[in-house]
Length: 126
Image (cartoon, rainbow, N blue to C red; front, top):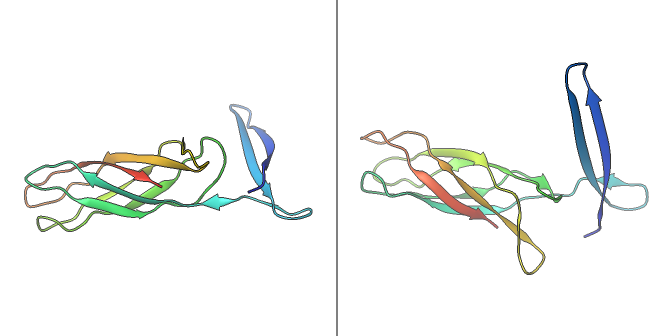
């Protein structure tokens, strides 16, 4: 993978000052474009009201730049007669020895079940 170039952008609207860095990867002579990637994630919920659920899916794409994050959303496995929905944003990248990285996912599901309840969840996006 090639080293990213970046462009600094500053926007001032009279009341606020916003600064951004856009990163691009060289994709050939004179061609620059973001280099997005995704991760598969999996996790498990807390044990509440006598059961737990599993979760898994694929994150939304994000450019491979320092401190990037990914959005994710999904539905848990069907356990104890119901499912829960979840969504969130991963934590920042955690380096791996091979030069890759992974992210932590955690949060709380929506309310559902014969006895209405939520679950906390935790997992990894690799």
